[in-house]
Length: 87
Image (spheres, rainbow, N blue to C red):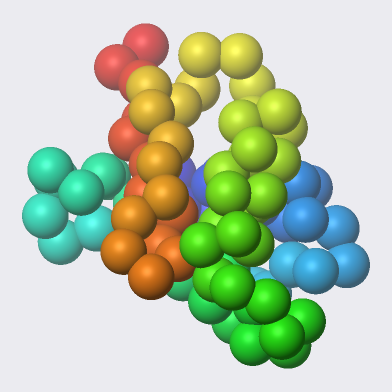
Protein backbone atom coordinates (compact mmCIF):
# COMPACT_ATOMS: atom_id res chain seq x y z
CA UNK A 1 0.00 0.00 0.00
CA UNK A 2 2.83 2.39 0.87
CA UNK A 3 4.38 1.89 -2.59
CA UNK A 4 1.00 2.56 -4.23
CA UNK A 5 0.69 5.83 -2.31
CA UNK A 6 4.26 6.77 -3.26
CA UNK A 7 3.26 6.25 -6.91
CA UNK A 8 0.22 8.53 -6.52
CA UNK A 9 2.43 11.16 -4.90
CA UNK A 10 4.98 10.82 -7.70
CA UNK A 11 2.29 11.24 -10.34
CA UNK A 12 0.74 14.20 -8.50
CA UNK A 13 3.99 16.09 -7.99
CA UNK A 14 5.96 15.20 -11.09
CA UNK A 15 9.47 16.67 -10.94
CA UNK A 16 8.86 17.95 -7.38
CA UNK A 17 8.48 14.40 -6.08
CA UNK A 18 10.96 13.29 -3.41
CA UNK A 19 11.19 9.48 -3.09
CA UNK A 20 10.66 7.75 0.23
CA UNK A 21 8.62 10.44 1.94
CA UNK A 22 5.47 8.43 2.69
CA UNK A 23 5.42 7.03 6.20
CA UNK A 24 3.02 4.80 8.10
CA UNK A 25 1.32 6.99 10.69
CA UNK A 26 1.94 5.76 14.23
CA UNK A 27 -1.39 7.06 15.57
CA UNK A 28 -4.41 6.21 13.45
CA UNK A 29 -6.31 9.30 14.62
CA UNK A 30 -3.76 11.27 12.57
CA UNK A 31 -4.22 9.11 9.47
CA UNK A 32 -3.10 5.77 8.12
CA UNK A 33 -0.16 7.39 6.31
CA UNK A 34 1.61 10.74 6.37
CA UNK A 35 4.19 12.67 4.41
CA UNK A 36 6.40 15.59 5.42
CA UNK A 37 7.20 16.28 1.75
CA UNK A 38 5.60 19.74 1.86
CA UNK A 39 8.09 20.90 4.49
CA UNK A 40 11.02 19.82 2.33
CA UNK A 41 9.55 21.41 -0.79
CA UNK A 42 8.72 24.61 1.12
CA UNK A 43 12.28 24.94 2.33
CA UNK A 44 13.63 24.63 -1.22
CA UNK A 45 11.04 27.11 -2.55
CA UNK A 46 11.31 29.47 0.46
CA UNK A 47 7.55 29.23 1.05
CA UNK A 48 5.34 28.54 4.05
CA UNK A 49 5.07 24.75 4.58
CA UNK A 50 1.30 24.81 5.16
CA UNK A 51 0.75 26.62 1.85
CA UNK A 52 2.79 23.97 0.04
CA UNK A 53 1.00 21.22 2.01
CA UNK A 54 -2.41 22.51 0.83
CA UNK A 55 -1.16 22.32 -2.75
CA UNK A 56 0.15 18.78 -2.21
CA UNK A 57 -3.18 17.79 -0.65
CA UNK A 58 -5.17 19.17 -3.59
CA UNK A 59 -2.92 17.49 -6.14
CA UNK A 60 -3.08 14.15 -4.31
CA UNK A 61 -6.86 14.24 -4.19
CA UNK A 62 -7.08 15.01 -7.92
CA UNK A 63 -4.58 12.30 -8.88
CA UNK A 64 -5.71 9.40 -6.68
CA UNK A 65 -8.26 6.94 -8.00
CA UNK A 66 -11.80 8.01 -7.11
CA UNK A 67 -12.71 6.89 -3.60
CA UNK A 68 -9.18 5.73 -2.73
CA UNK A 69 -8.70 8.21 0.10
CA UNK A 70 -11.31 8.50 2.79
CA UNK A 71 -9.80 11.80 3.90
CA UNK A 72 -6.70 13.91 3.25
CA UNK A 73 -5.75 16.76 5.58
CA UNK A 74 -2.97 19.20 6.31
CA UNK A 75 -1.76 19.04 9.90
CA UNK A 76 0.76 20.75 12.12
CA UNK A 77 3.53 22.65 10.42
CA UNK A 78 2.91 21.06 7.01
CA UNK A 79 2.35 17.33 7.25
CA UNK A 80 -0.15 15.82 4.83
CA UNK A 81 -2.06 13.00 6.53
CA UNK A 82 -4.31 10.60 4.72
CA UNK A 83 -6.74 7.84 5.49
CA UNK A 84 -7.36 5.01 3.05
CA UNK A 85 -11.01 4.25 2.32
CA UNK A 86 -12.30 0.86 3.49
CA UNK A 87 -13.29 -0.11 -0.05
